[in-house]
Amino acid sequence: MANQKIASIMLESKLKKAKTLAKKSRIDEAIKLYEDILQKYPKNQRAFDAKQSLIQEKQVASGTVNNHTFISRMYHLYHSGKFLDVIEIGEGLGDDTFVSAGVWNLIGASNKQLGRLNGAVNAFKKAAELDSQNANILNNLGVSLGAIGNHDEALIALEKAICIDKHYAEAH
Image (cartoon, rainbow, N blue to C red; front, side, top):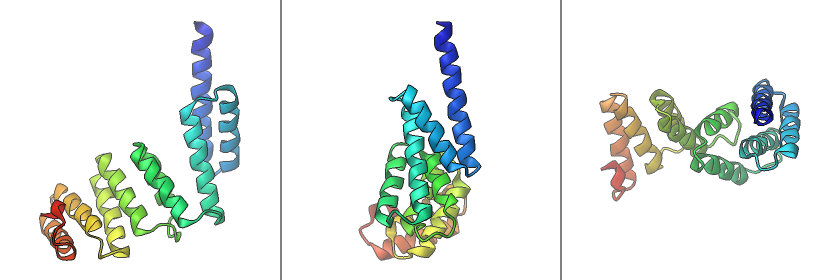
């Protein structure tokens, strides 16, 4: 029993160290540490997901992944409930060409899921700047603006969403 507890503490320590390495942009070292963890614990989902995310980030940074693959990965993270990962990866890209309206929309939705309404508004505004004809983005912006009490701007965004798609029920 004591050995299991020690093993669990050591595993948590390694996971934390790998995450710290990744935050310090020591991606290769973090990937290697996740691989070491997975050799001993091949079913550890946290290590697997973190390693895959780092590999994806590395591919994006080197230009070896296309926009579709990147956005698909972001959607997967979002729909897996990994909202912080979506925010960290998306915002870490800065002005990279992969930061499309769809990515900013996911970052906004992730912020909203975590209750970070100001972050959601900022991300939805960036998404709307990139795609001002997307009713979904404008609806998300309007709802988030309303949630922080900015009702005038919220109404404008929701009216734009309805003008773009008169049948867009969520904006009504």
